[in-house]
Image 1 (cartoon, helix red, strand yellow):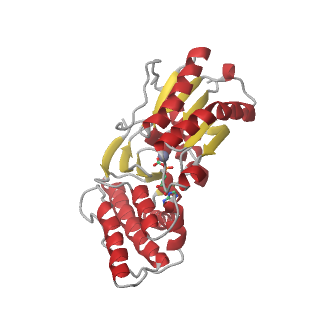
Image 2 (image 1 turned 90 degrees about the vertical axis):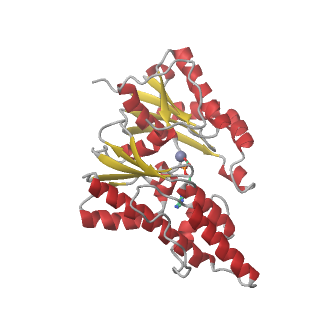
Image 3 (image 1 turned 30 degrees about the horizontal axis):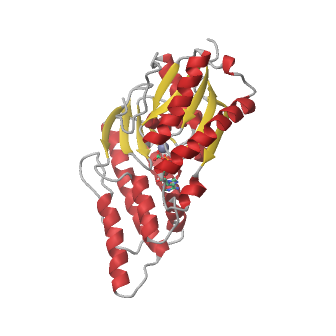
Length: 334
Ligand code: KG4
Ligand code: ZN
């Protein structure tokens, strides 16, 4: 079979990224331009600023990716793009750029769901083995997904309120850490002790999660201590919070593997970079004989390489779109 080169776009939040991926597995070149420093000034992503920055950066990022790959547009087989979910103004820039190149160079246009991208970040580590369970943990999603084969997604559970990354970022702010808080809470959690009495959220027989109650519990402890003229110990709060999050995520994931008779587990999304979660899953999977894959750290947060990896399988399945393709702020993975 001929080699297939996918030019991929990701602009769903505050990273402008373009990548060229060969045969769904081999990274030829990736450029990620992060706007994190700008948004950190405001304590979170400002959508209007994000879309303006994408406009400023997108053509530079395309050129740099092609230059890095020593490739011309004529050598590309198809163009994949994150069409959603995400910030609509941000998504539109990537979608418009992808449509423009698809039109000019007459290439197939492949729409990719952002979470399919996060899942296929694992395919850049080693080929996915099926059936598998994917634990998706990002700033906008917390889902357990069953995949019986490539590009087949069955959601078996997920968060009923806050996404886990969102809870990390809010807890970080409450305990005085900068944005984005997830990596900082993770680092603090490794320096503290589990001293705060926080609930294990939604500890039931379902595969659903809930993190808003746990987040509120952290806020209540901080406020109660403040009213007494005390300060919380941020390291200990980070440890206590992370322990509850990791415990409930791993407990439901391990049960899903057992009940679905699945021996392959992958983790996806920004929170898959979490050291505490990785350590606990490694230990449990080794004990249970589960084949665990986690993405390389640089593929955990948003990047176009994962979109190119997913886009390859969507391309093989003929999932192309016309130039009427539009960005979607929210959409179900299917
Ligand atoms: O996947 P992602 O880049 O964006 C979405 O698609 O939402 O995930 C970003 C989220 C943020 O909430 C960030 O705080 C969290 O991932 N995150 C972490 C860690 N690294 C990133 N959360 C916990 N521990 C980490 N080490
Ligand atoms: Zn993401």
